[in-house]
Length: 295
Image (cartoon, rainbow, N blue to C red):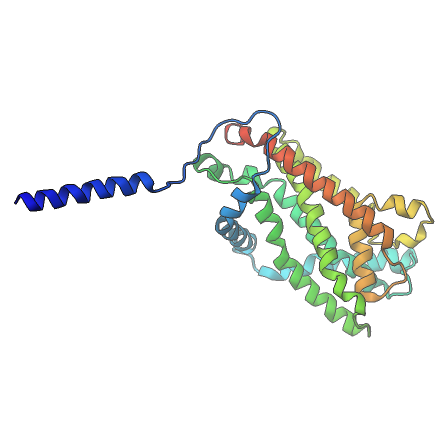
């Protein structure tokens, strides 16, 4: 009996010692002061949550829709039809020697990815209010997931773009290997602007009314219905302060082999996109402490 009690005592002591040695992760939630770090390591630790948020956004987007994922193709396609009719046929806008429907659709594919990501992620925090109030996780995951979920739509519309190229007798040039870089640039631009507006939308609900107007204005400020070659230097280079100029011209150059090699345009557009992402991330983290109270 004494031996049994002695063994049990040793086991309890060993278990207590093991619990002391075990490093249990502790998260202390407290309001931040001033500018704070981005905590990208913490975001990486929640990468599984990010995956499920992306999957949730994809399912919700097409739930109970008659045409389903076909909407990913319908939107840029009919925009291309309208542009081809009014700008290509009636206004006779030049298209750098490319058939106008293909010229405009090659720009509308990355633009639709950018615009949808911007419009949906700007309201993503307000739409996830219940989740934000109930559990802690890096809030950056919400707008990032919303933008990344648009990759599914991009792939579908890109497949149609390849079909349209085949119809007009175009094959991708060797420059197509640069295409992932231009897609990354569109992703960075969309995410950078989205971080700004999603954080602002929590404080000022006017943002949701501004977004449609801003998107429409940005559309016509980007060489989608017209080529940037209409501008002479140095205005063409200055024009690339709009980072979507580099994306659109890059797509046309990589896929259709246009003579408007992006060169300096890509450098300037990439710098602006990076600054948007960096500043948007820090602003988002600065305002994050108020989300649960205000949203």
